[in-house]
Image 1 (cartoon, one colour):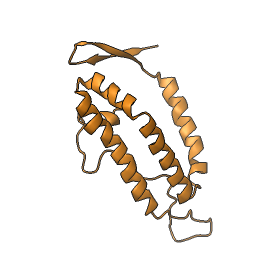
Image 2 (image 1 turned 180 degrees about the vertical axis):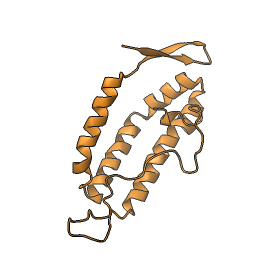
Image 3 (image 1 turned 30 degrees about the vertical axis):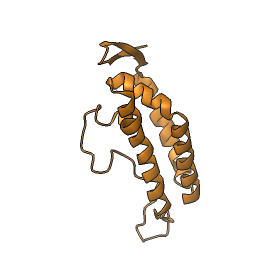
Image 4 (image 1 turned 120 degrees about the vertical axis):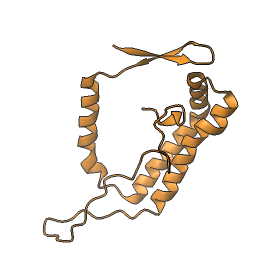
Length: 144
């Protein structure tokens, strides 16, 4: 297994060893996601809101750990990691949930349909609104 050393820049020491996925593991994950998409595309707006709510609840439970990891990896103060960096992840989940509640899911077309309607298998996700940065330290929660 390959690993990557995460260096705490304030201490210039290894803070953690991160396991790196193999190409085979990534392929397996992609296949599983593709296999799950047809069923997920049929979930209701209420089910998707419930899922986002559970994600938000789990993030909140792990908030202090997320902030601590960000502090160590970035070398940021605990106040910055907790008050801004980890908070932004929570804020984006909250914003995503609010947007999802007002989102209109499109219906899948039937074989006889000529409307051209396309299914909406998932909600939009991505970088922060207006975020164009590709620098991991600017949005550490989004590092993948």
